[in-house]
Image 1 (spheres, rainbow, N blue to C red):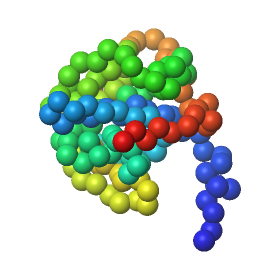
Image 2 (cartoon, one colour):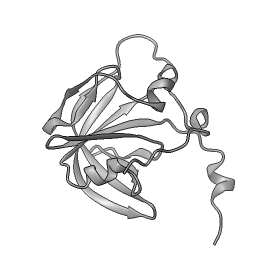
Image 3 (spheres, rainbow, N blue to C red):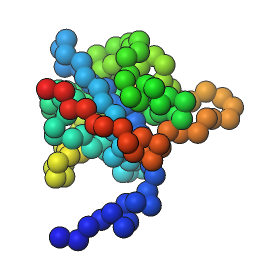
Length: 150
């Protein structure tokens, strides 16, 4: 098998916090694999590890919320115990983070140990006016151990 590391070692994309709710069960996780995948119609894909509790909750959800992290949100990336409000279909929106969007799950794509959730935007919180702080990047969290709670 050919390794992809010589290519991916040069990538340094943003990281996101994904939140989801089904009934009274809520979950969330840090995600490094996500991207816009269509302009018209607008679509975004989020890849969740099948080992993650958030993935198991998301399988029964109608919506996911995608929160963009800024460089000064590192502590939140490590443990995002912050206030939240219910969004579309109860999908948790973290009060401290904007921009974010909630997307309706249109389908799933198998991708090895991750599954891609294809999202159509349903609600958006745009960033505020003025200069925007730098985004938190994958390399800044490279040594963070992934949590896969049961």
